[in-house]
Length: 141
Image 1 (tube, one colour):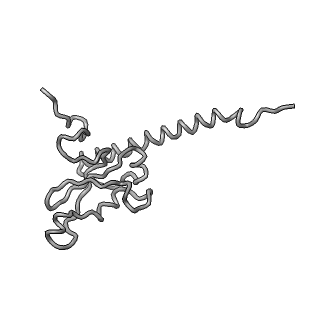
Image 2: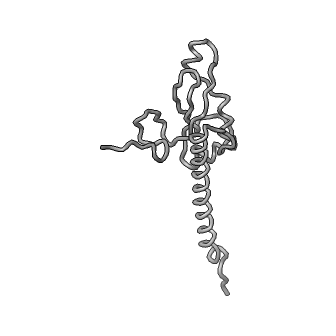
Image 3: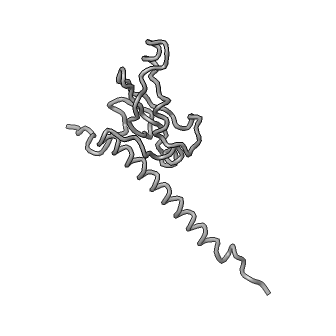
């Protein structure tokens, strides 16, 4: 007498549910990161609450763009090399940011930067391939 294994009965259902959960987590992480970017752009802040580093990485936002308050230099920080737990909210990184040119000029860490947005690429030029936000793309004539 043979019985049907639990793997055969439930395996496909479990695999489908796990795949759906993974897709929904990704969609939620992308939505949280985009909402945070819009809040920073639209209101100029506040930076908190923010997504955690792990959620940003899961959503494909590998870089954090920071602007120096002193010299207005834009820089990107790779979130994969930051030595912080993945549960750390992105806004907590702001106090650790210091501008290298301003610090070298003064001889000590100086001019904390403020967070601009999460990015998928590390390019910070005006002609980069990643548009800032809807409506910010230049129309080609």
